[in-house]
Structure formats: C-alpha cells, structure tokens
Length: 94
Image: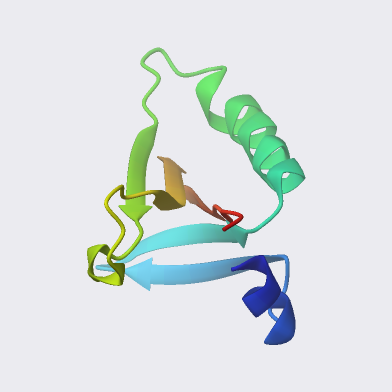
C-alpha cells in the first residue's frame, strides 16, 4: 500500500477542512506515525486537558473481505475529538 501511495505521488500527510451537516471539521490524513503522535499531543493540549469529561471517538476500517483473506486486518484507524479527526492509513507488509 505504501508503494502504491508513493507511485501515485500521494502526500505522506494532508490536512482537509470539511463542512458536514453545518458542522466544521478538520481532518488530518497521514501515513506517518510521527504525525499521529503530533496530532495526539495537540488534541490533548487543545481539548482534553481542560475537559471535565474526556471523549475520544475511535473507528476502524478493515481490509476487503472479498480479497480472500481468512483474517481481516485494520486498514485505517480514525480518531476524533471535538472537530478534529485523524485518519491513519496502516500499511501491512505482505
């Protein structure tokens, strides 16, 4: 998957701003673990440290079951806090 992303010249990380149902979201998409760590530190500082109740949304997208694999593997991990969302693509070595 990493080879495909590089072959298609996709950026290693990208930030998008989106409006869904009149709500503003900042979405960070990345292939880099360092960017995940940076996002977690920023969200903790900006949202979670001062919050009385701390809530983080978690979603996983799995590999396609039609590919014939017996075991599904996580392909994307999504974390959300307030209007901040991180989408991390997990690259598996086959």
